[in-house]
Image (cartoon, rainbow, N blue to C red; front, side, top):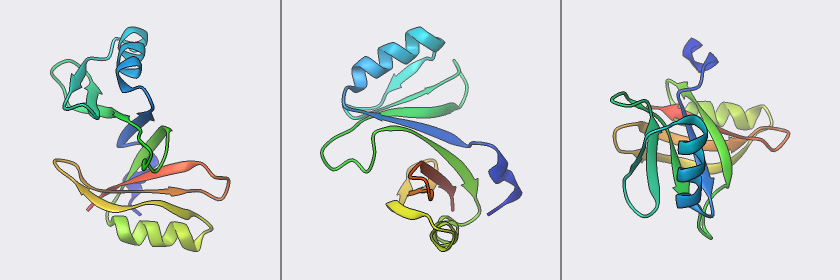
Length: 118
C-alpha cells in the first residue's frame, strides 16, 4: 500500500433504487449527478472531477450500501495483504474505464473496503 492510502480516493453507493438515491443525495448535499446509463451515475463538484458514483444494485451485486475506495499502488497486492491480515474478498479485481483497477474486501469486522489503483 502507498502512503496516499490515508485518504479516500473514491466512494460508491450501491442501492436497489438508484434514481431515488440520485435525488436524495442531490437534494441533501447539492451534488451534481451525471447519469451514465440505467445502472450508474457519477457525482461530484460542478465542472470538477467526480468524487464517487451511485449504482443500481442487482441480484448479482457484490454489496449494497457505501464503499469507500482507498488508493493503492497495486490492487492485487493490496488485496492479498488484506487477506493475510484477516480480510475476505468481496469483489475481485477489475478494470474500470478512466479509473484504473478496483477491488473490494471485507475487513475482519465485515465492513466493505475498496481499493483503487493499478
